[in-house]
Length: 302
Image (cartoon, rainbow, N blue to C red):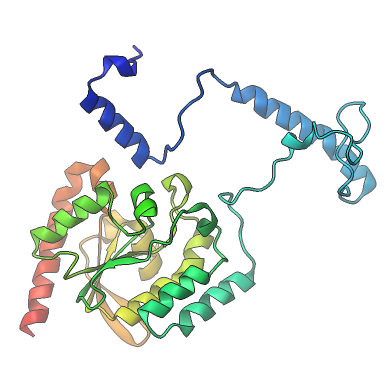
C-alpha cells in the first residue's frame, strides 16, 4: 500500500529524506511521470538510423552534418537542431578512462610534494581525474597530521562533499564514537580517504579512479609517517595492501603497509558506512578496536 508524505509523522519523513540523501538522491521527481522507456526507444532508434550514413561515408560527419532520420535529408548548418537532443554531450560524471599521461602526471605531482600542504595543493591542481569535475569540493583530510594513527577510508559522501572534510556525515559520527571508545579523537588521530572527490551518487570508485589517486594517498602516508595505519573498508584495504581478499576476510588481521622503506603496522577493518547498513557486524569492529587499542598502548610503553 502506498503511503503519502501527509500520512507520515515529521520524524518518519525526516528519517526517509535522510536515507535518500545518504543514498545519493539529490533531486525530486517531476509531478507527472516520465516514460523513460519511450525516451530510450527514441534514442536507440535515432542512433540506429544515423549509423548507416557514417558507415557509407567511411568518415565521421562534419560539424555541419548529422545522421539521417528515416527519409529526411541531412541537417544543414543553421537549418534545425531537432536532432541535437538525441546525441547528448558527454557529462563530467561519465566514466572516461584517461590516457597514460594523466597517470604519469599524478605520479609526478605526488612525488614532488615535500609537505602535506604541498600535497594538498598538488591534488587541488590535478585535473586528470574525472571525479573532480562532478564533485563540489576537494576533501583532503581532518584531524592531527602528527598523530600516531592514520585512518584511511574510501571516498567522500554527500555531507563530506558539501563541508570539504572527511567523515562528517552519519558514517563520520559513528567513526567519532568508535574513536572515543578507545580513547582517541580527531585531535589524536588523522583521517583521510583513498579518493579525495565524491563519486556521483556515492558509487564505488572505478579501478582507474583508484589508480589515479593512489600516488597521492601513498605520498600522504609517507609524509604523515604514522606509526599505525587503519584501512576502513574494501577499497582502502585491497588497494593499499595489494590483495584480492575481501574486507570480511582481511579485517582484524595485522599486516604491514610499505611506505617507501618504512614498514607500518596496518589493520584492516569494516567501514563505518557498512556498519550502518549491517549493525550486527559492530561486534567484529569492536574486537578490531580493542586490538588497535592494545597496539597503541604497546607503542606508548615502548
